[in-house]
Amino acid sequence: MKVTLETKELKNIVDLCSKFVAKNNTLPILQNLYIHGKENTLTWRATDMEKYIEVTLQANIEGEGALTVDAKTFVDIARTIEDGYVDIMIDQQKDSLSIKSVYDSFSIKGISASEYVALPEMNTTQTIAIKSNILAKGIEKVEYAVTEKNFSPVFTGVLIRTKKEESGNKIIFVWTDSFRLAEYKVDYEGNLEEEMSLIIPKSSVNDFRSIAQFAHSSNNDGQVTIELAKNLVRCSFELETMTIKGTSLLIQGAFPDYDNEKIMPKEFTTNVEMSKSGCDKAIKKIGILTKDINNYISLDIKGNDITITSGETDKGDGATQLQGKTNGTDITLWLNGKHVTDFLRTIEGEEVLFNMINDQSPLILTETNESQYKYVIRPIHK
Image (cartoon, rainbow, N blue to C red):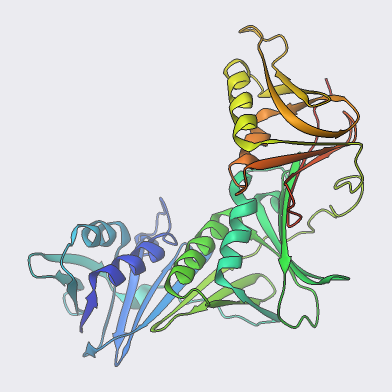
């Protein structure tokens, strides 16, 4: 089998596929990329048995062949090639793959494609379609603090759900670790016959975001079809000459019912607007004393005067002041400073709004005049 590809296209494909390859797995085949060429279709696959990717590309192919080769080796070679086009040849009898350009020539030893695992069957129960940039942005807004280790499996993934509301149908992205919660909600433009809910593991959701970002950069109006099965989700992207399918196991379990006054309040006694950069700098100043201990800071609001302090620590104590626009009563509460700066890195505007009730109730951070993105933090009781 022989096929000629644009080097840029080859690099994009192997970069995406390599994200799905098993890391430190005892089975060498799972550290490989699967490549199959037949007629006018070139197929690439990769998996770690929890998430899967398949890329099919329209191409002029001579002959037929299939092989699996070490993903890291292939990616490292592809990144060094500077010529505009590259030839890929598979010799199944020798289990080898050749990569040739004007100036470069490589041969990689592989493993027979017959030993590679098949993609899981999807018995689809629900399907929705959204724009690829919405999927990418929704994941970006909530996944940054997700960890792969938690006492509850549902806290190690991102919830994606659709919901019928009075203002219209919504698609909602949510994450929580029980101490804080991020919700990003946007309008869903399609028909919504029934609501859908799924929890995608952190190990998969970041790779789905990478595919969505690539799809959006390749086709600004492109859509992703999300198919839900009993324990699987598949995101399919249709580009001009390429189809990408990302599949993942789902986290089983009930996500917390967070949309209530105890967790996500709607009425507040104090609202404070302040500069995002000013707030970030102030917290990082005080973090010099607290980041190696517990990241705790005190936020003291008196009119438009805001003071952030460390309290007494083993290293000493510190305080810094900044100005804001306050509406409501004075308030003092303790927070985890890192939890705040995590949120500040994700917002696009220049102002952040703190919505507070008292030093015991959850507070909600948002961008000014932005209701789609909410970040809930529990105060620290000292």
